[in-house]
Image 1 (cartoon, one colour):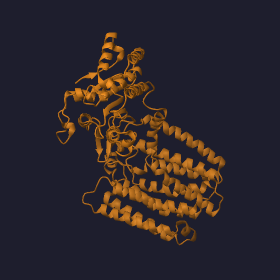
Image 2 (cartoon, one colour; image 1 turned 45 degrees about the vertical axis):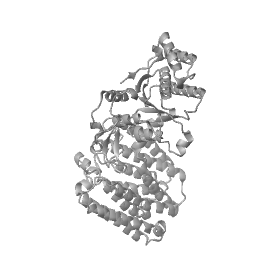
Image 3 (cartoon, one colour; image 1 turned 90 degrees about the vertical axis):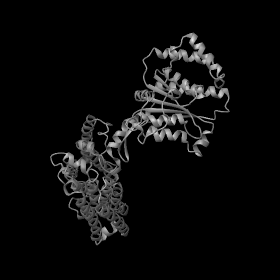
Image 4 (cartoon, one colour; image 1 turned 30 degrees about the vertical axis):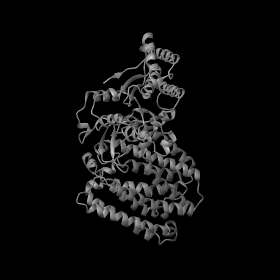
Length: 558
């Protein structure tokens, strides 16, 4: 194996002349790199050598021939990266001695050659991976494919947490693909589907946590002129030199900072709150009017912040349970940004302090601009905040004593509907603002109960007393089914009132078909001898069932 540190700044004048003569002697490089260009590179790299290197770059040449045009491209990129003050290592796969084939079922258990150990060390060392290779028959050469099969193995590049969740062990590395081909780029992309790029970018690098992955496609090479080849070499050089500004664009750096926070907020659960809040506000306009859009927006900002604070608080206080959870999904197990180390505990606690300050300021504005009694506005706001946060937080810690599911159902139905109604100027004792939320409450509870099934083992180990932990999986599922029946029967009772009949209309009967489907899935789960740890199908159907009891009243009141 030959691992080269290439730096033109290390070349003395005789060595530089020898290299120029060597380059001139190869047909594929004839007239592509001039003495003037190499001297320019020498000056640039000499200047760069005076400064401390920054980014660590590993260039991997996947062409099996050492005298290929790909090799020239790789060296040109290295020269540019050196000019950008980068630490550069060069790995020519043709110099490595290893078995290209995976000979046993688990590739990580195959005897690892010394060259592969060194390659892994370099990959771990690097911040930025650069792959230079040709596209043959639409994909990478067998040499590079064999290298990936042997190196990007479980335990090094990733590991499986559960059947559909993997830990990305190469995060936060970035990558650059430089691919040569004879197929026109447009044909490769539109007709072939760009397999040479997508297979490495999506199925390998991004899967292992390498992102973003830049691509440079060079085509067609075979019949291109020497001038065109020289132009590509220059382009690749400048691509390497662009590392002096870093790999990420300002926008990518910004998104890199905020994406963990967006993930922590768990936006997928907020539409339910919005529609329930809007039902309360629109109900007031239906009964008394007029509707105040400014109060509506201000009030929703208050509720949005309360939900964010609740989610952050739950994530922070449940971090030990989430760490033990091996069956998490989009629907359960928290956001996992703390567990995965994307955000620190200190960042969480600091954010909670800032959010509480912002919430207090918004509450002051709510008091100033309130249409209804200031005391009523502040009362419902403080109550929903206290109840919501107490889902996990002491002293009540509802989720630890069997009341968590009821609390979630209450805060996402009755509480937010009442807030929407009162913020617009309604009275707390109006019966319609309470009864309109009954079907919604009973439609929410099944999803919250069933969300405790994947979390069962972790919650029990952490001492959480959810209904699933207290009742067991089967009895808790029966309770979820009863709640589905209550959601449907409550609608039938409410439709006896003229106003509520119009609010729910006859389209709500379609929800009964959905409810029957959910009941059937719950029945199937109860009768399974071996209860699955993941119930994503049931969770998806249960959450969609809630939409009927938010969207139908929302659009009928709109």
